[in-house]
Length: 209
Image (cartoon, rainbow, N blue to C red; front, side):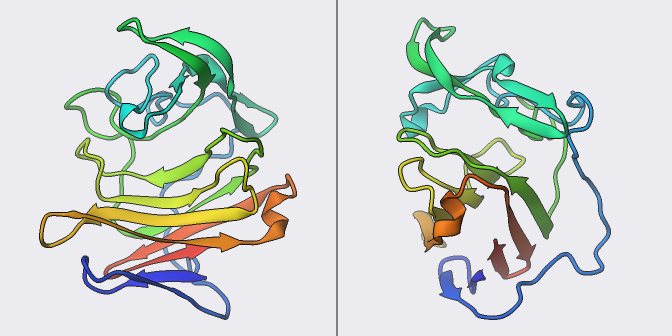
């Protein structure tokens, strides 16, 4: 497992042997089995700044997230990327469309649908391969800011065997703090399902695959 610990501006990542930490005897507060339509009181299909479709301009992304690119069937939630073009509300044209779900705020100055401080979060994911794809599973702050951010897992489609774990925060000097580690395992590129988790405790974040 990969563990990050220490003071906020002294985070380090260390590869550890042995069985990973897990949920233990902590109480389950939320689960989603995708066995029925998404509950709109929990799930949004975009970020808070634009409820019917959006992009993340700060990442220079070339897709617009659209609600129609999210589907639930046969106990699976599916996010689909496809060729566009797709026109943004401001007239910007994106060459691709994609899908996302979030339990974050449904709109400006509204509370998050689901939030927690410290805990164990896990998802069973089947991540796609293909150049240009960038599937991700994040934890974001409830105050509509971008930091701190815990990336439970990210992969790039041209390197599906490489899982990327990162923490993005702000150091005591006010500068951006970005620490992380890539973990390579050829089994991750097999097109099958894998469990990705974070065990978030005071002073530490542990990534688990």
